[in-house]
Length: 205
Image (cartoon, rainbow, N blue to C red):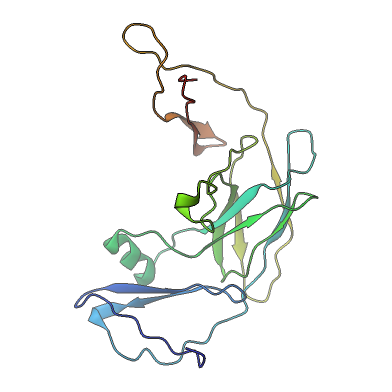
């Protein structure tokens, strides 16, 4: 409502998690322990911290129109235990896009540790529109950054890594091209798990 109040039906009884996801303030997560329902009182949003950076290709040139995502890492404690118990993803994340100079700015985030990584999926676009996925222009490893209250973070530099391209084609049992399915390759980069995905064309390439 205009006065900031809200009402939300929640399955009861049991554990529940509430996320508040504003644009100009830091998002909040509230866990409703012990079947708590009813008035949650006043929830005061904070300004959070703004994370900025630049994305560059393997030659150091800016990457324009690249989607970049910041995901909050799972910590320890009752709140994160609740997420594990409910088997749900944390909604504390932001996605942004690089400008003509490869620079990006995330909407405010709360203090925490985040993985910052280019992504091929834009959650801000409706899935059925056909515009939610965008092919990545290279290979990247995630950057880890810890945001602290009242300490503006230094700008990040996201660099594409040297890479190779694996090409293939789906064939049927008679050796004829077929459309095929999504294909994946899994590995490790700098000790971190990594995977790539390919969507075949109608000829199976």
